[in-house]
Length: 120
Image (cartoon, rainbow, N blue to C red; front, top):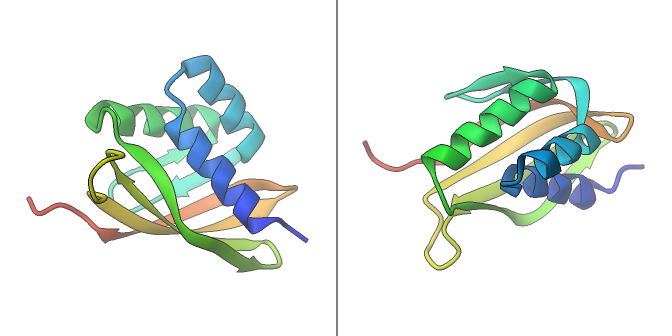
C-alpha cells in the first residue's frame, strides 16, 4: 500500500527545491530513473529531464511555489493529485492535476493536466 499524500508531498518538495544539489537528491528519491513526464506544454525523460523541467519553471516563475491542493488519492500503482503554482501571498496563477504511475515507491510516469492557466 502506498502513502499517496507522502508521494505527492515529495513531488512538491522536488519542484520547489531551488538548490541544484538538493533538487538532484530529491529527484532521485522521488522519481524512477527512467521516468517519463508529459503535460500539454512540456515533456522530459529521466532524472536529468525532470531537473531541466523544474529549473525551467523556476526560471520562468521566480519566487513561485507549488502547493498540494487537497489530498492525493489513488489505487494500486496509480496516484492522482492537484496542485497550485504561485507566490505565497496571492492566489495561484496556474493549477493542474497530475496522474502518475508508481514503481517501487517512486514516480515512473507523470501525465499532467492544466486546470487553470493565465490568459495570453
